[in-house]
Image (cartoon, rainbow, N blue to C red):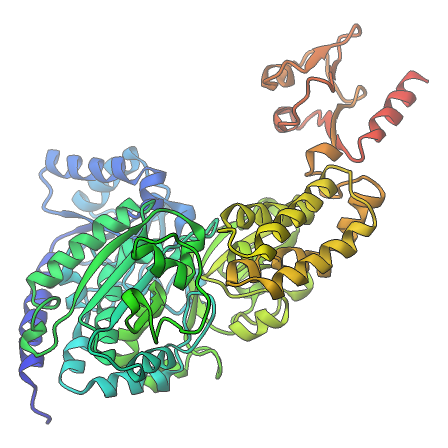
Amino acid sequence: MTAKTPFQERFRELKESATAAEKTLYQQPVIRVGMATCGIAAGAAPVKEAFSRFIQEKNVDARVIDVGCMGHCYAEPLVVISKPGFPPLCYGYLDEDLAERLVEDFLIQDDPCYEFAMVALEPNDVFPTFSDFPRGVHEQKIVLEHCGFIDPGEIDHYIARGGYSALADALSGTPAGVLEKVKESHLRGRGGAGYPAGLKWEAAIKAGGDEKYVICNADEGDPGAFMDRSILESCPHQVIEGMLLCAYAVGAAKGYLYIRAEYPLAVKRLRLALEQAREKGLLGEAILGSSFSCDLEIFRGSGAFVCGESSALVRSMEGQMGIPATRPPRLAQAGFRGKPTVLNNVKTFAYVPPILNRGVDWFRSIGTAENPGTAVFSLVGKVAHTGLVEVPMGTTLRELIYDVGEGVANDKAFKAAQIGGPSGGCLPEAAIDIPIDFDSLQEAGAIMGSGGLVVLDEDDCMVAIARYFLEFTQQESCGKCTFCRLGTKHMLDLLTAITEGRGKPEDLEILEQLARDVKRGSLCNLGATAPNPILTTLRYFRDEYEAHINEKRCPALMCSELIVYYIEPSKCSKLCSVCVGSCPTEAIYTRDDGLKAIDQDKCTKCDNCLKTCPPDYNAVIKLSPPWLLDEKERKKSS
């Protein structure tokens, strides 16, 4: 048996203490409340307070603790109740009344109220997993392994589950050994580009010099993306450990977590995690008594999307304007303060501890040969079960949307998946069986991005969707490049004209050529990928563009300038006035015959009348193109 080093012995003491405390905790009922941003927004704070109040009032020996995001955001507020003698049970859609009932029936009377349980979790010693959820067979959690199970404000919870053991073992070896394992794992950066992390680390080592930096890019700015935020809110120590392992490998004594200021809860929990790591001797001077010293610090970004680009991020940290820099040199050669700098995404760093703990072969057995590991997505949009998911690379879009996300919401037809954030692409149903990995998505015209995936249904207009994402990137352009500054503005003007019925047939050729020019001529990836929504929608949904231009018609009935709302007289009831009360502009009036009609000059097309018209009537309809209204009016008159 190999003798343990002093660093491993010191860590063993920390782990034994943490494990003993964890086992003691679970000798009593424990209620874990999902208190990430998603849970708090859904009302988890009053639910947590209700559990605490009822436990005290009824004199129940139990603990209520905060945990992070469990991934099932659609069912928030969520709690998991672990009671000795019962399997851990997960309850969703909670309110204060149900909290009181669970305390009374389950904690006091041993009735688990299975009718309210989402699923019984599979016990694993004292730590349950979500493998019994229907989507559990498709997920494989590495980055999200501890999220939703541990209190992010208690470092001992992470240590008890094996946290920081990879760091203790690494200190007993050599920095070169850590680098070699990361290189052999073929871990590709999860920030969007997919560049091998080990090669980036190696470049920083080869750059030489006594001063190096490690930076974690947590400037997550994609609309609908919340992966990095949730990880930092749920398990900040895994990211910290990954950064320390990187710092040890490349010889850095200082690191920064660049996190956007709009993530106050993540900042709060990250700050606490750093303090606790220092107290345990896992961060700062002489880590675990070794000769390795490294401290980490939080840098709060100001919210500019372009600062997610690596060189712009570093420039903003230096107090300069946050705009991309020309290359070479790359950051690994001359980055922060002119020193070799390794900059990786939150998820990339979070992969490193599991890879070192379980081995390169284990990691490479997951996913595909060229894209090992998993992909973490925020699954949003018109999908039944929104949330945070982690699936092996190579999983198809169909499996992700239908098996994990439970399909399209409200029994609507699937139309497209917008993947990769605002610079990603829109993939149609014909591409739904494409495997999710860096290379396959790029061939289809999309990108992996940082992990945002928006599901679109039959009610979404692809021209309007392209315009929406282009408007975002155009507003976030730093303006340094002519192609990006002027090209995105010209493309946005063309898309606006098309969605308003002012498009011309030659616009499509101009739009496509502009998109390719901007893609080739932009300095950074914001400009180079901004045309992706246009190019993919032109490639897969060109007929919708042609309908807007040639017929002045929006097939999805979404573009407000190309639709009108109309009340069908034959279906309208004189006794009903629901639509009148729902109209904010008083555009709906009562005709001389008692039926309702819409004054088109006052109508703002808010959709309220369509939503509130009773199903028994369905008298309100949308029409596109607008001149169909005149046709109906003519028929009525005749």
